[in-house]
Length: 247
Image (cartoon, rainbow, N blue to C red; front, side):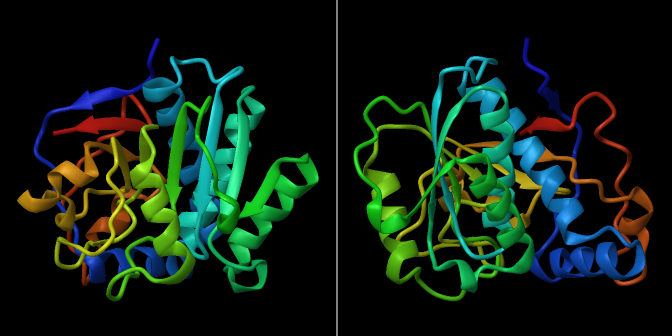
């Protein structure tokens, strides 16, 4: 049985400056470390992957995880660990050299290395025959212009695959500040956004790119949303599930 619930009430949306302020407040004022948030992100992403795409049982399923340098990549790596622990065969492909990742993502990568999970450069991406899901953690909301280099090639590769793609927070290549889809942008079957929905995900021209929209509880205290500079009224919404389908 799926643990995902549908949430039909109206929700406030947030923009990119508000996202940055929420991250700052969590770390500096509430002492919730980026690593803690990343762990919550990875757990929720794994739950959605399991219940929506892996028939509620990851055992024996095959998943490709595409990880970038930032927190999105780290969340995808934390998800890889969870799915592996639930019996899935996971392959990880990174969009950069290890030293370019942020410290939290390097931490997650080190755990996967200790577990013996396959980790390769995105340059080695090949056929997806026999795989069940692609998880997109290549680029988050800190996007400036069209993706380039290896991240661009990884996005193009995923879009050519018949395997469904699940994006973390935003399809890689989508500018959440403007709602503009850069070239290229991941075409996701579903997107799991974090904390509160991002306004850029509702632009009419990107609905077909972000697919089904889900919301993850990453542990943001409700009182944080009411802090000066945010002043967002958000009632407790994760009462029944850590992952919600939103309309």
